[in-house]
Image 1 (cartoon, rainbow, N blue to C red):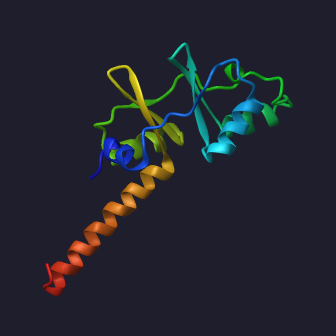
Image 2 (image 1 turned 180 degrees about the vertical axis):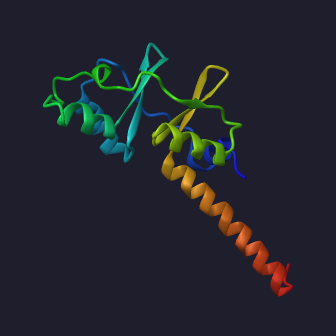
Length: 144
């Protein structure tokens, strides 16, 4: 089974972030521009939280706030769930399911090295399963 590091090796290590004082509107613009669903919130290069489209929907729209005058710090998730790059993809998926989150920050030795999404995890699992199926087909047909 693949590790988080292998997923990041394929996907890339780019970390999209904003500062806590960034408006929610600006954060949403950045998410749309980058085609992502969450941003790491960094305060002086330290992990302060994570903000997602889900935070926007639940903590801005449903509460009657306005994205142009609400800072990210007011809606971000402060207790960020992190995993190490050596963590297996199955274990990462279990964490996401148990904690009801769609993004995990990857940290190694207190340094943020990436972010993985539930989509990244599902793709890695499907790729692994496809590889296993192909290997079994080759074995059964005598081509392997």
